[in-house]
Length: 112
Length: 116
Image (spheres, rainbow over the protein chains, first blue to last red):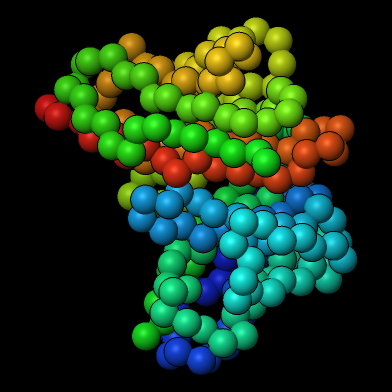
């Protein structure tokens, strides 16, 4: 029972490079979220999805894109990485009103 | 707009002392409320949640929280803190079953240090 799996766990990018973070959940959850965690800022919502094929912007969407082509996967893309995107990224999934959100272990991204 | 405020960035308590972490929310109706804990280098673990009913909810690790509608608060408490409770604690507002609210929003967190 894997829960929520994020890949990769660590990554170093050069400014201007692109990459995709993958989040996979095996709990058949409808809602999925991408957050970034920075010191003193808590978890800030980047984008979220309430179902397959739908996405919406969160608090800090600029510089990121997402896709939810399959219910179990939620991809976060950085088209042109910037040092300001150095952060720890967490994916989460939940069923609305059903209780806790399940989190991945995080991806530590450094942009140099 | 929905928001969650945790007024205390850092709290230090002695082992065995009581603990209260504050959380205030802004929302048009009663949201679903959560407390999560994050140990260093780890993901988030759910401590407890409030959906409806009894305003005092019990969670894991001896934690409890009280929902006060009049104060828009959901404060976390523990009567006697253990050194292993040192972590960062996040209050969150979650999506409702009715679909009227679908974001999971977190406060900025409170970092708890425990002195021996």
